[in-house]
Image 1: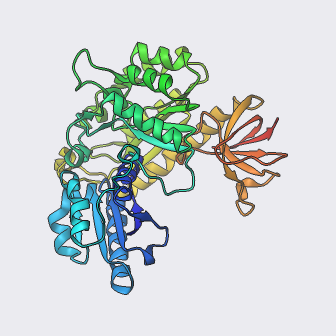
Image 2 (image 1 turned 60 degrees about the vertical axis):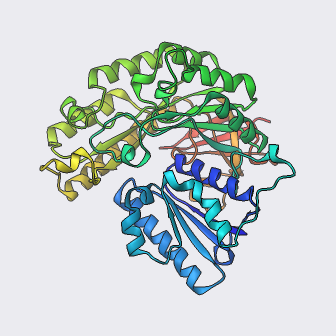
Image 3 (image 1 turned 30 degrees about the vertical axis):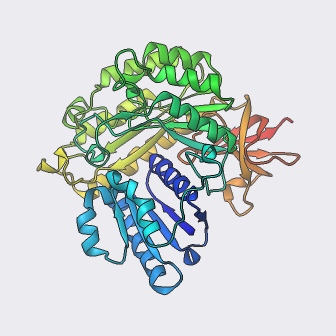
Amino acid sequence: MKLGVISLGCDKATVDSERLVAELVGHGAVVTPDLPRADVILVNTCGFIDAAKRESIDAMLAAAKLKADGAVKAVVAVGCLVQRYEKELKEEIPEVDLFLGFSDLHRLVPELAERGLLRDPIAEHPGVREFRSYWGDSPHVRYLKISEGCDHTCAFCAIPLMRGKHRSEPLARVVREAQQLEAQGAKEINLVAQDLGHYGRDLGSDGPKLPDLLEALLADTSVPWYRLLYVYSAGLSQRLVELIAREPRIVPYIDMPIQHASDRMLERMRRPERRRTIAEKLAWLRGAIPDLAIRTTCLVGFPGETEHDFRELIGFLEEAQFDRLGGFAYSPQEGTRAVQYPDDVPDAVKRERLEELLEVQRAISAERLARFVGREVEVLIDGLADPLDGGAGGGATHVGRVQWQADDVDGVTYVSQGGWAVAGTFVRARLAESEDYDFRAVALT
């Protein structure tokens, strides 16, 4: 069976897609990038915000059209949007052959086998079936999901409605999966979850916690870089921070979403932190971990947000000096507490505030990057610099990232490399120049 894959949404969904593909490959499927020639197209949908929902629906419709036009025999839709709106989707897009929510994914193989599209599992070597199958072009950067679901009750977020309560993956399973990612060429593994800091809270008081998991990953793999993405400040324990500070393979980078800095808005959003505690945590982190880069996420235009609330947020960002920031305008999510609030902010105001937020952060990010100019660093090469990319000017031959730059969401480092460097290798370089989000570097080896 030739399998085409359309994976949408967050990095956690990417992990889900890779796990499903691994199961199908174990039953004889072969992944193809040529969607019109696939036998089956698997669409992993996202249901987080309106734009993501529209993108998912468009992808399903496009796959259904390929089925009508050519060799595609079946279209399968899974993921968050299906979990929430399976009944409505079946009615609106009957061309899709199979909709599977999270609790029904066990039906994927039997359903396709019943249609004559899959054979029995490969039995000759049952021990080599993999957790994940990768079909992209950057196997050196991978994502490792250590838990599922969320116990937080943020007023704006529908993720618990789609993903359920928080459930930690068993430590041994996470380590085995990391070992397989390393065997597939991973040089950087990004740990992801709705809140990394919650890892192990459901495994009992004597069960492993996030520092235990990290120590096991360091001991049982040789992956050069581990990165922590999305951890609430409340989960940043003394033991965890000390571990990050002393272990060079855990890069000095933390993605810590705050969403806002007005206590009134934080309370209305049902966030656990307040401005003072966030500021104290930032000071502690920076004092404990040398050269730490901190990324955050902010949400503007939440119902009831006044101009004063927004000014509080801007003032805090100028004070806090986050290295990176992802900004979003509030989008109502069906089933959440926030949709009941009557005082939504006009869309035009949301857009204006988001633009100002990002512009303020652009200047902050540029200033934060400038402090590293002149440093000798290791650059993880992602590939050749595109000569058509305006940012690659100045003689750069390769593009990669330093430890303060996460894949996809942050800037990049353009490297002037005298020789040839393969994607997934490290190059020693000196940072010669910084821009708003990117570095320019000169290779030393």
